[in-house]
Length: 308
Image (cartoon, rainbow, N blue to C red):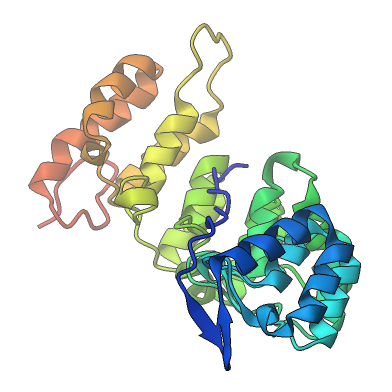
């Protein structure tokens, strides 16, 4: 996926002694239902039927409904919902059961009223999460989830359109609501990161100039700025003789002109200067020399002059 989005980590079963209502919950019970959900969903139904209070328990972060949705067991998902499972309960990273659901389960959850447009902390909406996994033409289970959401009548938003490389739609949506996309993040990945990754200069210009996004907006670990991503995409693979697409160089130029700091590449800057084709390396070298004199980095002009 273009945005190199981080896969959801399933939290290991580390539940301390707890209670649901008047019922004690042991680690053994939680470990048992977790195994049954994944290995024998029909037996899981019998297990929960005998101990219904466990329907509200967690295996560290996720509920039985979230695990069953990820497992793809439509029968178990329906049973859990009929017996009191809270459909909008959040698990790992604030994700609901819809985020990792298989296509058939996603349809069941949507019909049952799960909140589709609510964003989890850091992951965006379920549509954005699925679309991010479908970038670069990937068509796995997330594609089924995305199709289920769209079939239910939910239109693509700007971020999802960018992930799917529908640039015309993304630009129309950005122009219609420029501030609406500026604050969106999917695993710390912004719309500007995605545009930089794709070499989509026109969209990047819209995001910076119209949506007022910072050209140096941080990403993963506060390091992966759009410029870092753009440089990585412009760096040829060892032994490659393919010419650099002009959009890759222009993306680096645009970000630098708008205030991105090449010096944030740290030690990687010297290596990048050696590996990039000469014209692109010259752009980085020029703005790396200017940026320390201009700590705010606001709207650095193309001719290299330092604003007052």
